[in-house]
Length: 168
Image (cartoon, rainbow, N blue to C red; front, side):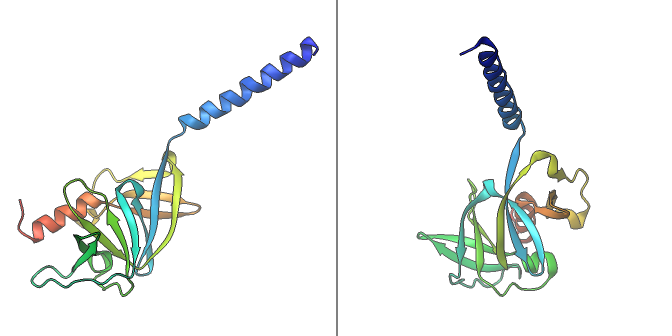
């Protein structure tokens, strides 16, 4: 092999390595894009344990209307939060659940449907820095193509539940 061929192969390998390093430096976040009535919302994939469809909800009396009851997952009860009631004041009729992976709570979000799982660059995620009272359920937005989709704040929902249920 001629020296010039060897030098050009080394240069190509270095360029490929540099572009791979640049790609690795670009950070991504994964989201589950869910339908809540006629709107789309993003839920961080890091908080989702599993997606479950069409399991029975066991009713619980004397709770706020957005708490629909419990579902049984592997012998464990998960509190069902109807995001349609919480956000839009209208009950979700479908039975798609996002079971959350939280260290100290067992929650499942009831949503209309699951659209997709997306991986977006960190540069397309826009946090909300100052929240008004009615924005506490959202932590920001994510750009998907030409659309901006709100990111659901799990902590905001848990804070609302704690207040409504009289927990400190």
